[in-house]
Image (cartoon, rainbow, N blue to C red; front, side, top):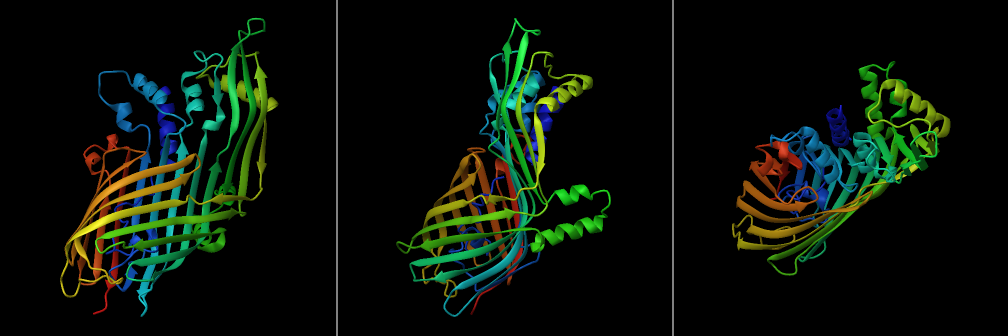
Length: 465
């Protein structure tokens, strides 16, 4: 039972990655680099993404434990390993998943060397913080924690499924500076949001009372906000698969909750061989007004008439639930609410060497010389409910010829200090395909992986003669 409970916590959290795309950042042979920096430099004059296949991205991670920590064959007890993992994790540890699918993408350069882009992509992003105190209470019980507060604020998560409609431009300002902006309209399919919960559970000795223990739940106020789910839940038994899909597509294409966002970025050359770039992404919000259901549980509770047992029988839990319902209040609300997008920051510096002197390929659109090799460092941060998460990357970027290029990265982040990634990009005439993957050292045993990421894409790219 304890094993099942712990695995449910991990499974719920994982189903509930990081958004760092260090392999694509500064990779100016691909249009996807403009999604990470609208002020990026590019080496083509027009592109068309293959619909639904120009970018497929999936990443997932756990900052604290992995499955190997639970199931490794070390001669010990699995219950001991679960207990060790529970105590190893903190309320700041998290589980996360991010998925992106580029539905449509197009870009073109005008006579003044400005590059315009437009497109639509679908995204799912979720982060669940490990509920340390509630998990410890449910797994080990309160027997050994007399006088300790179990804090319900440890429980926090956010989840979004949405479409993003975007249009932007990259402006050639001078041979030393490029900058760009992108406007976004967010079309929400589903949102779940629960942060800033409060309340404590506490057990104290009370030998003078009718029971040896007295249990308190004080200042409890737990709120889970949802949008885009209520109508699906209410009509799930009456809705066919076709109707369900039609409902989801309608929400994805501006038929549900909407919001606005902005990206900005730049590329600056302090000298021919040095390049400095930066971007800030998803400065935006969503107003959740349609199909809103918010579930609030609040109040105070005290009992010394029964002794809390973890785990208990079904009859025991029914009795305790009835007792809670007499003391704590629950409400279902339909109040609109605003959610903020997870703002992301990128910054980098790199050094180019071994000049590429091929006659047709020796100058960038900005007028700078090209180099076969680049060594660089990149910094990434993302705003999450409990602060910023960071990642630092060093990379080597190699152009082998006009048709084949690769990039290798080493990244240290909240998940691990051994993340090796590889990107390869190949062209056949005007057709391009790329493949990128992170954490290559863990692919021989994915159970050990703290996180994993894979990206693939296909597009047509054209350059002026």
